[in-house]
Structure formats: structure tokens, C-alpha cells
Length: 199
Image 1 (spheres, one colour):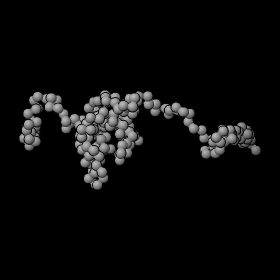
Image 2 (cartoon, rainbow, N blue to C red):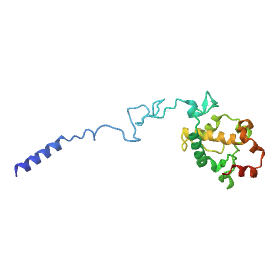
Image 3 (tube, rainbow, N blue to C red):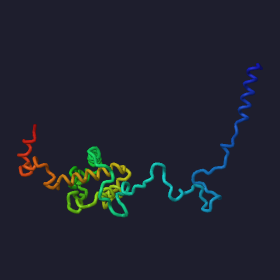
Image 4 (cartoon, rainbow, N blue to C red):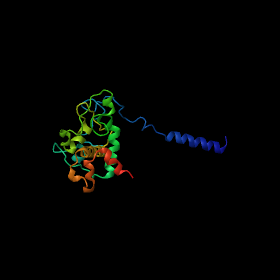
């Protein structure tokens, strides 16, 4: 046997002897196996009360629940920008319009196919609800409406709530909020108003 081959076999034998099975044979619990160590006999331990997964601490109650002290918030806890409203409109059309319709009147495609219609956003009761109410309904569901907490993140729920307010405002804006140079259009019929706005 050549010296090289003998050296290779020696190194291989030494490497094999160096491998230990401690990690493989260590004491451990397999999933759902019992344990004599714990009083309840379970090896799988429940989470310590108050445990929060990294990145999911929700200290801002107004933002994550739409409530403060059990009452619905009256102000949106995020800055309302044109980008936020555009996002709200986009998400509303995906998740809400099938039932609520594109204008929020409760006449979406699902309703047209025979399902029960939700109330219009334009009824007095819903126009007077605090903004936190809409966020809460999206988060927790209400009546026949399921919750959308898993499908729509909190930021987008606030964007949708802001957009719902714009839909409501679009139908009930006070005359004082209309620019003076546009008020004459309020008294004209839709057919008269459109040609003036075309370019």
C-alpha cells in the first residue's frame, strides 16, 4: 500500500472517529409527545401570558382598534392625503363594492345576484357614525358582513374608512363648501352642466 493511500485511510478513520452522535442522540421532545417533567404531562408549552411576536406589538389602540377607552374614535389616526384616498378607493372597489356598490348605496353586484343588501352609507345613521365605527366593522365584522382583518391590513382599513367618508361627503356636502364660481352649476340640470365643463 502506498504511503499516500495509507495517509488518506488514516485521515478518513480519524475523521470518522471524531464524529459524535451527541447532537443526534440528545434528549428532546418530539411534537405532541408527552412529558413527565411538567405537571400537565405536555411537552409542548403554551406561550407565556403577554407574549407578543416580534413586529406585532399594537400599543396604539386608536390605530389598531378604532377605539379609545371603548368609544369609537372621531378622527382618523393617520394623515389624510390624496394618496391615502386613492388607496382607499382602490381597496374599496376590491373588497367593499361587490356588496356596497361603487357609490356606497348597498347595490353591489352581489346584491344584484340576490344576496341581502347592506345599508347605504348615505343613510343618516351611518353618516353620523364616528369614523372608528367603519374601521371596527371592517376589523370585527357586523351582522352578515364578515371581518376583513386577515385580508386588509390596518393602514388600508383606515384608507377605506377615509374613502367611505368622501363618498358620504360627495352626496351631502354643504353649499358653503362649493367654490363660489361653481355654485351656479348646482341650479343647472345635469345636461346643461356637462357641455360647459367640456374642453
